[in-house]
Image (tube, rainbow, N blue to C red; front, top):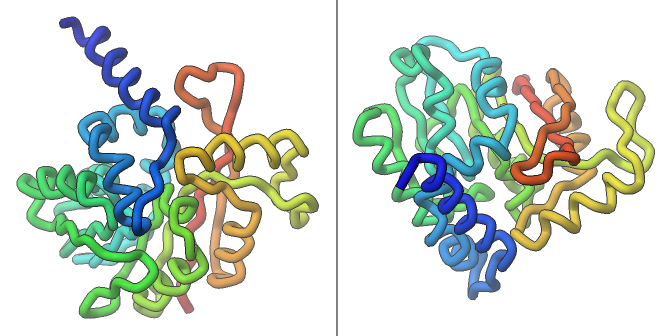
Length: 244
């Protein structure tokens, strides 16, 4: 089978599961396991074209020497590779996720990266033994039911001067703050309904909550193409906040 045919076949498998939507499990973890189990092998390749801004977010994080990094909802650990040559000066990169099939991919990746550790845990409550230099939430906040608790937990585990980096889908409030993007009614109605089928919930509240939690911050708002939907662009943001 050619590479193009293999890619198309993999995409069709992922798209079929997306169309079926996230099943309802006894717990959120059970739902995630059931949803991602069969598509975990194609997860990184397919999401590479969907989850934009991750490389730019990781590259923008100001990291001290021998940094300790936690990624909440980090799945397969793909984002660690965006550190590039900086990974050699990272003391530890811990991926925390509830989804065991995705964590299995992270453990495979960790075989070539001694800094990488994969832990099954809840982003709203898991804490490292010591404070860390950076926390990343990459397309995770929209999938965490108690997202406010996840933000609070992320900021709590940071050292003073540590950074929280977030990239995710979103929509603007009906009346956006001055200096921020204002999305039209169609955008604000369409994307939450489109993604909710797969357990993803773009919100108008996430970015304002992040800005309030960490007043010293920078953020970028943008739009990205969606695989197989060439005429539409989904809004996303990158946020980097510094803990006082």
